[in-house]
Length: 282
Image (tube, rainbow, N blue to C red; front, side, top):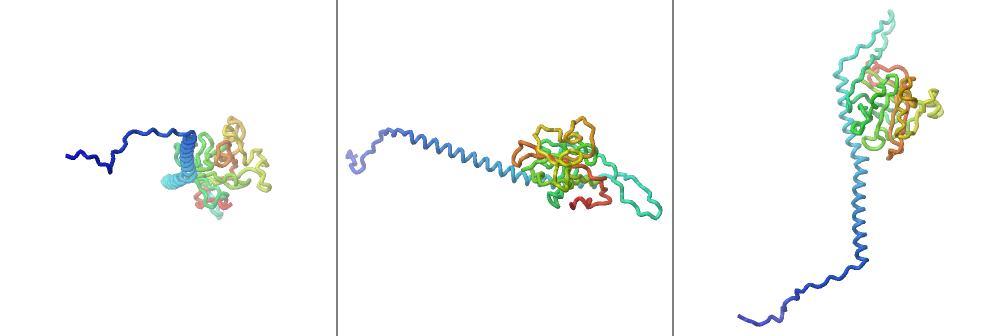
């Protein structure tokens, strides 16, 4: 056994060395780095949320609309035809077009009620209206305010819709002009409404009824969906109206953009006009 010491590989010094104290600048750099990383994380999360709200929800809503459109068409196809009033023409006179049959509306919350067509927003613009205006219903598409009139009825058929996200059904509602057609399709009929105002001048406040065709109000102003828009909810109705409501301005819920329209003439029977009334092209 050798007791010689290996001078070529001396034992290492295992004594701990004291760490150099960190300066104030080191602490500030560490803190700044941490704050920066946190802000980047929050920024990425916010960006992903915006992408979800603006694009992903639109894709989801489009799929919901496709399903609702198929559902309502199947419901209408399965329903027995309503008995329309019959009129016997004089001898030798041509047979009149089928008269619109009276309609009754029964739709549960979240179920399809009618189809909304707005030519001003595109030749192929159509959205299925569901019953109810809670968030879960508006995620599917425009929603009918409960306890307001049904299509074609006296009173105010009021419909709400998102402006941005969830399909953005009313994104371009500010493009509407006085006299523009808004067509509501039901199981048996087409109902044409016209935006109030003066079509010649484009003045929304020049309608003889005194009801503006377009206005911006606070979210708490519920008189816009009264039976006569702008009047007390208890006041007698003065006609058959349609009101569309959405958020204003875009990307904000601070106010509401409102469009009022009035029923233009009698309903058109789908039996006599399966492809829709002339207003769909205006």
